[in-house]
Length: 268
Ligand code: FES
Image (cartoon, rainbow, N blue to C red; front, side, top):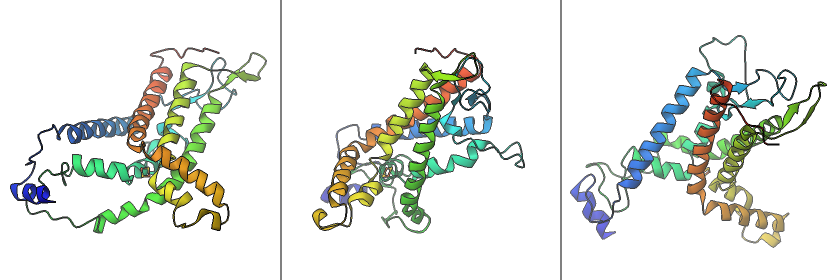
């Protein structure tokens, strides 16, 4: 408490800390900034985001399973929309809102972009007093609703992995197969699941507001779910970053394959 008061008086970035406290906020700003630029570019560019347009399962591609970038899934194509409105814009607001309102990311970008404060026991901009998340920031309370959407997206992305496992056969049927692309989509969906299932809101949803698990309906199940979510929640920051990387990489991989830059190796 004493340190915080001292640094407040000294001004922005002033601190008695001797460690490199600025590395975290700087790395966060660079990583989130780079991801934001890449995702915006891909959404606007909106090309080569799927392998086998409209193929779904084995209907059109003769020799490869269908691959769809997670940035465009579920693929919503509305013929009456102007061409400049990318299908990505119709869906990215949901996972974007989920991350924007995430308890961990809030801490990260408040520090990295607003410097409010830049770190523990580090001086804030002069004249700025803590007022909590008020006014515009009240939208952060929507996190639980974004969670419901994120859970639905996990189902959609899991279906995409199933599509990526259905390879066409010469007789017009299909058989199970796996390529590097299948593994990339599956790994991304798994990492997004580990991030989503460690959500603080989900933890409260399954186990909160209960004083005695054995006294409520499904108490045993709720307790087990709460313990599972709590275990993941301990590593929420890690899965937030890993899943951010995998979702960007999955899009990049599908882009390269769909553009013909690289071949997607079938391994099974
Ligand atoms: S708190 Fe991070 S996803 Fe919900």
